[in-house]
Length: 392
Ligand code: KG4
Ligand code: ZN
Image (cartoon, rainbow, N blue to C red; front, side, top):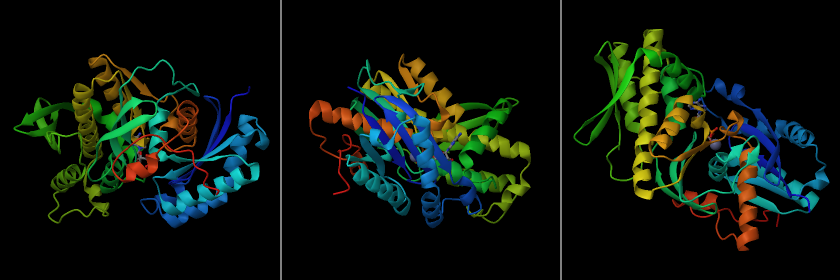
């Protein structure tokens, strides 16, 4: 019997994406990024995203089908991101998926975007490697919209055990970048500058009572200091708004500004030297990432996992990848991160992987009782996606 073919669609934000997976092999992962359209607004404009998804969908779809070398009749399942994301952007993909599933008379699977980011970690050389894994494991999910630590009890049982109580990690990167006058999305540029300027600062953490700080040393002296909010909160939650305020104050001090920096106001960065901007990126990234790593380490001590899985756009930061790998090595754990950069930021290959898991659960357990997208919204990461027939 031939391995089943899943065609997956993802339009939750600013990437129009279609992928084809056969069995556990990803045959194609096509993508059109709308970043250039949103850049001048400093963020994703939902109406523009929707129109661009509609305009580009067919091209991306045809590319995914051609590259996979399949015929439409070969498709056994259509999977689509049903949440989380921008409603009017999601709707484009969901409508296309419904049309296709109806036309081909195949089941439609409604998938969670965050489940996609989680399972992307198991992709290696375009193969979804789900066998011979020991559980439990921990997942760190860091996207532009959500930041969470999840406990993976088995492939089908995932619970959210910590999350950001305010901004997501990627959102914090983007807002910080905006303060510096860097282009949207700021994350990639901040992590690039941080890597370039890392040799100029020695980063050390210090703890004063219950507060943890990231200190940047130059010539043996502390040059900058930023707090890691909630580091000792006694739970696995994180916060980014305090870091945002602290870094804003630092920019104000460095630029000698008396008035408070408005987050939308990028002009202030003109008063900073290139070295200061670079060093601030090192500091911000160190604080933002240590906030995650400190909590992940607490979770490791509590849950004794075998593996750490990393997913979501911020995992494209080389620094985060290194920190996760080092943390895993320190505790003798296996770390898993998709080996293809394209699978880290939004794409449809990860949605195909999540759909593969949902189908496997259906095969093994007969019933897929809850939906990860809905559960995530009500604060429980829960089990896996139900195989739903949205076309009915
Ligand atoms: O997962 P993703 O592609 O989309 C959402 O689901 O939101 O994540 C996008 C986020 C953006 O905030 C972007 O700035 C951040 O990921 N990002 C990065 C890097 N590449 C993308 N953050 C840090 N370093 C990067 N290299
Ligand atoms: Zn995402």
